[in-house]
Image (cartoon, rainbow over all chains, first blue to last red; front, side, top):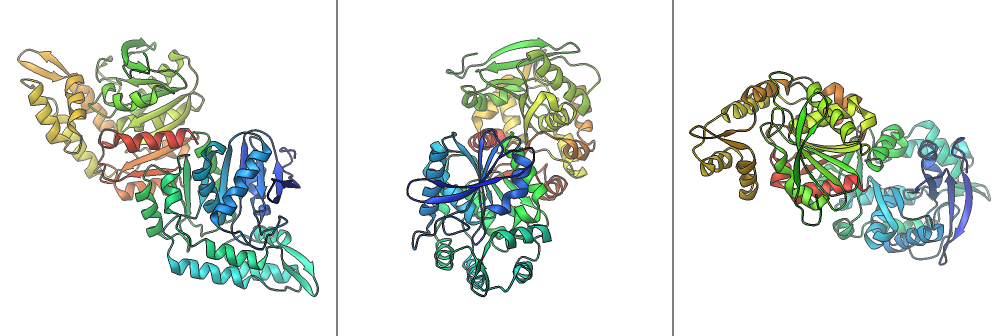
Length: 274
Length: 274
């Protein structure tokens, strides 16, 4: 909870219809972080460390992920967005800045479109409308392949390093240390396999309406080498909403905030401090 | 001065080393507007009308232009930026949001780089580093061709409509009505021809340093059909500062705020409200 040391504290928050695990640090205006599919709140540690001297930073394990509740069903955009709204209401610290990566970006923009009174602005990292079916096919294959039994942390790190070749080793260690739990015979993902499968399918739902309707400021961030958001998908999104500013991060693939934390940090503060 | 009617009032402000003519409207945080070469403060009327209910909007006749002082020399980026700093200090309403078009964008980014304590953020419309020499050649030829005697307002409007084929008729009328003065035998530009020639040459000075150094948030806005800022110049600028957000306005040429005032307005508020 003290922003000076950069350490965060974890707690579960009951928002009424579900309980979510969060990591919190710092003080100031509320800034919430939402991870991508199969990931968890720990991946935002480096960003929180830099931002917690000015913001109340709260990274969320989204439903089905990490140490949050994992209902059997309910993994559409609306389900995730309702969790965001419930969390902001429960925290009761005013409008929130939403920083979301991938699934988290989809959920954040959806929440901002549905609940403009709860959201100050959104930083939407590498998820737009108009993503091609082939890109979703590849994502879904990666997601479903993650449901494995690993013999130890080293095996997890080797698997993740191969799956995310551009994510630096320290960030791979964060994913390995935070996203798995002991089980008979080794370690398994904390994320629920059935929740992941439903979530991956739900990512294919049309997002153009939410981007068209959202009235709060949205910064669109794309990794220049992203295999999920193609240049064509970004161009169509900008045609739909030419007023939304865009940052393209050179050298980053889809995992922008883990591959290029410094540029991501500057992009966030340039947007929020304007 | 009343934001409700959208009417602005003009006055001259002595900032010590020079006197500048401004148009003011509204109340709230300070938002200053800086026009392009040969233009004047009147072109920002439509934006001021929409923003003056939330901001103290002040559009400036920059040195050599409109009804401001026109010294014989002193039309480099630093001279214009020092005027911006002097104006913000004299107005004494805290840090200013700077909205600049073309020459005004160059001057605003330069001022933000030199005087970060005076500037909150910058919206830099269609002027970046790395503009090609041929684009400056064409700009300089247009600027120098403007020093003419016109027999009446209709002749001015016809000239401007040909020079700016994408600017709507109502915005052409604003330029014609605000930028010329009666003289023997007709009407001549208010902008000083020698000041314009020096200013046009000064636009060629390297701007990469200012963009590299500026620490305040800058939104880069480009007209998709701009003949001044090429896609290559924008790409090089984004490579220099990947953290700065970009808006590309479809259908707009260089004169973004006059051709596409609605998208410009939304881009400004999305940036400032984040």
